[in-house]
Image (cartoon, rainbow, N blue to C red; front, side, top):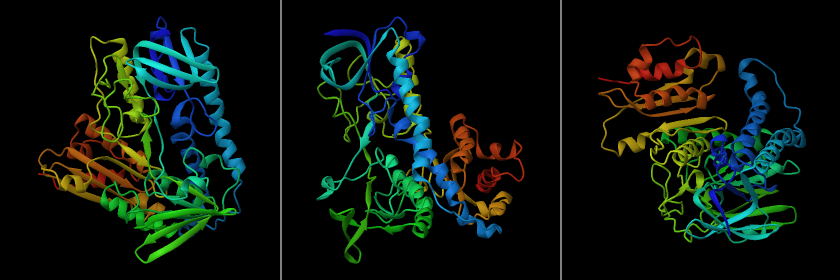
Length: 464
């Protein structure tokens, strides 16, 4: 059995931990790869946030003609070249994954195992590679094994060759029709991408809202707008799936009874599950949460001394910026065990890069209403500020929640163009305790720029 100072499981955010300060440590890095190519570098780089946002930017460009008429501009989309779109994106990403793996493999103090790792005991693992099986152990272990797409137990689904976010972006051809199961951010983003490029999209959901975990006003507005672009089949229960030649048929039960939807491809975007089961977390003595994540404290430490976990395998957020922050915590605590630091998860923002964009941080109004804390809310439409006039945006808005006594922001939600950018000053205000009145009144706001949306929302809060 080979013994190391440190074992890292996963080459995503966990791969950022080892730098020159670990030069005298013996390190093992185990990576099985993600996506159809088994690429190095984790979900975000290969099958997640980076390629999807590159597709989204392309989709935004393809969507421009739909907005031209109201501005007096005659635009037409003559067509799209799917192979060129796909290959431009992965022509950038794949070399990064290859070079990242080459860099790690070339480090004198790092042993790279291309395969799967599974705990066989406390800080002991069995690693399976193409060359065989090896037992390894370490004084310290960091589990950054990520998550994977999940699929509901629908009769026939496993037999119809369904797509997930891991595989849909490398399709050889652009499908004429696509069914997307799920109503969360993956569904919203990929529905935007494929519909903008010319695919007829049907979105199927069990509830009555898309993005139902967002603030209700935001989710309702997004759902209304989505229904104008996609065939929404909400409040549906999937009863079975079958393939008929080149088409797949999904059978549903809904408010008006039994119905079927047909398309060339079906994309399952119903959620993700942590990879704790694939690495044998229980066999390693690691406590799990009720939904299967590895349980960690604020220092990212697990129930086993000397073992840390970060990212999707332990975090409920499943966000790259959270995994990166948790990796920084683990890195510090590995190097400075006498002075551990904690990850601050108080104000974790997220965004949905669809059409329209959505961004959120803090409490929704529904959460605030059911809590014990007094709050006030305010809403500002894009159409009520000068740049909103310029864009002719009549659907976007910002919504803020604040403590009426202190003016401290407790929630912020934006739906509309550049929502993820517009919300950033509000995240900063919440993080550093800047109250709403000071934020609105004690600085200049460029006129007539889009941030006036935030300024006016802040000024609309009825503070004491």
